[in-house]
Length: 304
Image (tube, rainbow, N blue to C red; front, top):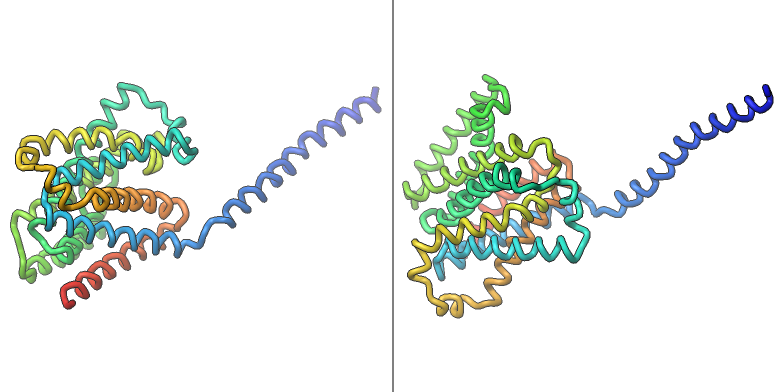
């Protein structure tokens, strides 16, 4: 019996020890997958290029054709269709199955977030009618400040005196930039600030309402795009649709509008891969580079 017990003990120790080799056998596949990922510089450059292309593209279409709300609605309709295709034809959005989406959760979380998302998008596009691209980018630098303030109001973050002093310094810088702006428009300034505040509320709502559910940005776009498209269309109906004619679409070009929506969607996808594949410090540095690149690009366009 002692020999049998010793054999069973040996087998059980081998079974327990086999757990460690199995874990190590899984690690090479993960490391191999990670090693196949491209360098973070690729994702950063891809994001910067698409960000600049989207801003200049939107500015050109809005200046030439107008209809800012309908353009925003078109982007959201395209995003809704594209995410549906990706969900049913690829495995990119398979993580959506981990989110137990119910009608109650959709009405309680997705719809309110979608409302703020739609208003933020509409405001950020309407502002191109009143302000220069360079000045808009200066005002967008107040985005992190707005998120922090909304987080304090919502009790998501604890107020910090040091952070408050930094906020005051940045607000002072934005105010000085606004005073020195030649093409200053109060309506455009208020639209940009409102857009920034609504975007901050959206981000905090995602943290509050969906904080316990792991939802990557592309899956979020899969759920948000349809409701945002409906809200944008509802807002565009009384303001822009009465003046809209298909001749405007023909003049702009179906191919141009498709390419514009495709570039805007690629920017969302690039943002997803940037967050997944790039450290937070690199993302912060890339955001600064993006702002400088956009100002430089605008300067070249003006001088030329």
